[in-house]
Length: 229
Image (cartoon, rainbow, N blue to C red; front, top):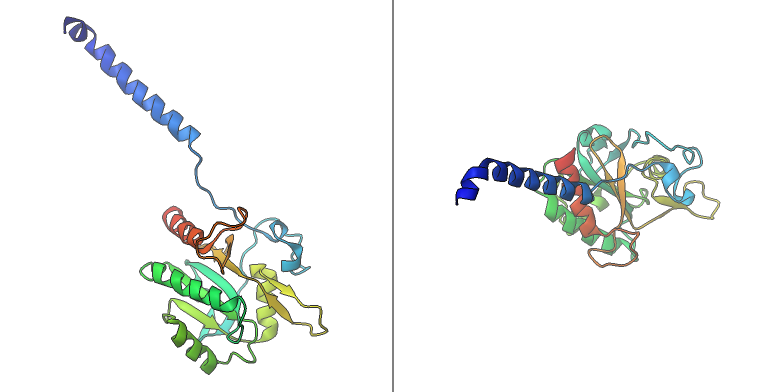
């Protein structure tokens, strides 16, 4: 006790410094989560229009105007300052679309109380997916108006936004100029209109290819963006 009393100030200071140093070492050695900002040079060239393939920095989603399931014109302003997830689908698709739509509905349930998060699904067959068709489909999938917009519009405009902005759609080998083959990608866009990730929209939570993220990981990244933007 006498030793402690004699050196207690030294012991307290030493213990405090030790805790601080250990905390600093732990922080320095613990990897900090980050999310990449994607540009056309980061993706498969098949998914990006030739006019943007050389862009390596400052890529953002271009202005757009499409019609949603309620017949309302939806523009980039509706998503301004929002984190959102975009995808491409069509209502008559019987392959990957049912899984993608089911997982988008699951994601909607997870983020429905997050006002800064929205969803945006583009039809790649807008001539078929009219407003009434989208309205029926939205009701069937439980889409919440104002949270999840399913949109149709001019096929050329959808083609351009898919290839030049979202980098998520391939072209076909047919003679039709604006034929599109949509992928399974869910695209995460931040509040500044930048792409922050691509995710397999058909995969809710299974671990498959380590280089491909699933929808559960998408939700985690949405939460991270919400806390760090």
